[in-house]
Image (cartoon, rainbow, N blue to C red; front, side):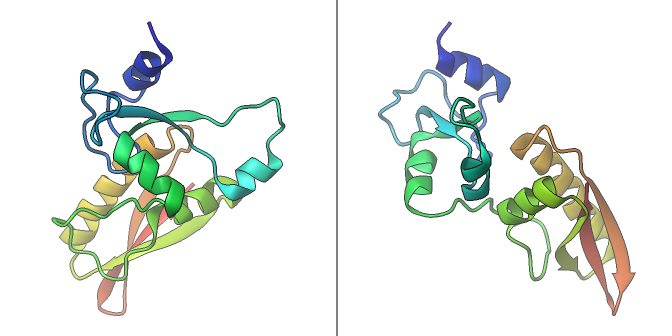
Length: 150
C-alpha cells in the first residue's frame, strides 16, 4: 500500500481544505486528483524539530497547489446563516496553540446558531482530529453568538 493510500484511508478520502470527496482513482496530475499535503502553520514550522516531519493530510491537487500561493480558507457552507464569520483555520490554529475560546460567528436565530455549531464541531473534528472542541451558543444583543472552546 502506498503512502497516498494510507493518508487517504486515514482521512476518509476527503480534502482537508475544501472538505469535498477525493477520488482515489483519479490521476494525481488532475486538479481534482489526490495529493499529500504537509499541514504546517508558520509558527508550528518554526518550533518543530528538524527531525520531526509535518503531519500529512489528503488534499485535492488544486487545493494543495493554491494553498502554496495563499493561506487556505476553510469555507463556511452557504446553507448556514452566519454573520461576521471568523476565519476558521486561523481560529482553530489559535485554539490549538493557546486553548480557551473563540467567537466564530453571530446568528439571527437559535436554530441557525445550533445548526452552525453542529457543522463547525464536525468540520473541526476532520480539520484537526487531535483537537477536542465544543461549540456553545450564547444569546445576547438580539442575536446568538457561536463560541468554539477547547
